[in-house]
Image (cartoon, rainbow, N blue to C red; front, side, top):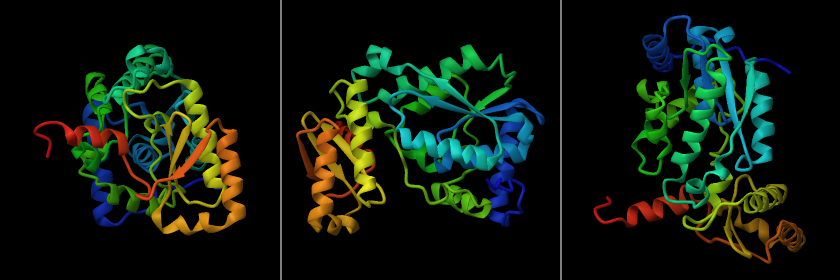
Length: 293
């Protein structure tokens, strides 16, 4: 497998972001700090990993990936493959957020408890063993402005760095850097955890997450480029890009997909005519609160 050239020259506007990331890390932890990057294989954490390696060196950069039932198996495979492309060591961290009743109850700030679990395990189990001077995660400037990112509170409480946001990197900037570095995640769609498919207030269980994981694999196998399968009891509400709705007009494809979704544990499968939606459950609740913009 070809290893990405992490030190390729960047355009001046992108280099300014890389310099800002390096400055944030060095100011917080020193010029030769050993940094653990909370890594998912998505474009944000991958770009952060690459820029961290540019700042402190690949030998001082370690990828830390949370593994639990809320991580889709396909995402785990993709993340592992891309870590190999980066040429950076990957450490899988088993997290047990489902054991926390506050997480399993699925409140609107569920992500806080997930990130708190991850950062607590890093603090307790890995920081000392790997001799890490700092932990960083891939929040970008657009993320920081969104109301549905309670995980940021956990990051602050655990003093986790957010160098991309500190450097003023928007999502568009992050993708531009990924393309410049030739990262395979450059155009990868966002892939929030499987628990985001369960409506807030409905319990998150390992069984539901397995159902969603299997059903989404079936949707992608049917030829859709991206999807969410929302868990509504016996009903799988399938979100795909609206430009790809025509795929379900093919009878054979539709019947295969229906059979696979039923095999995943659902009795019914419905197509959401609104198309794919980011933060469908969380943003709906947050914007409904009194005083919300």
